[in-house]
Length: 167
Image (tube, rainbow, N blue to C red; front, side, top):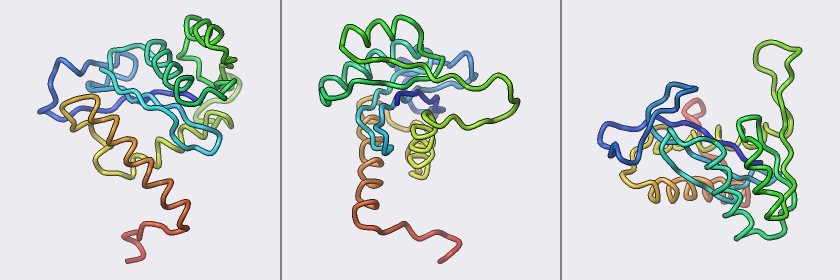
């Protein structure tokens, strides 16, 4: 599953590496994630928020195919357009657009896309990822990968982070 998320940037982040997401009206950066069906991060791309989802998706798909050549299918939302599907076909990845239901109003969780949204929610538990603090996008990618590794370690060891409610 591939998706992108707009994150506000702190004041000291250079303007050359940030932009404004016109659709969501968020100044900052976009974080693109590719996750597997367990919600584990395969690839991360951080760009200016003004970059369209197609460009982020193409970079993500290139990284996924480079590091995980066994991937044959990708689920994306409607923000990824035809160019992305064509690029996936060239790489041998079947791209399926999972649309939300237009018949129901309000928030309706979409099963296949929910995994990447859950991964974003888990990453947001890490204070350094709530806002974009890093000066370089490469540093932001490493912060995201560190946070995803903490999730993997928690799953492997069966431990959890103590909550403020239980402390």
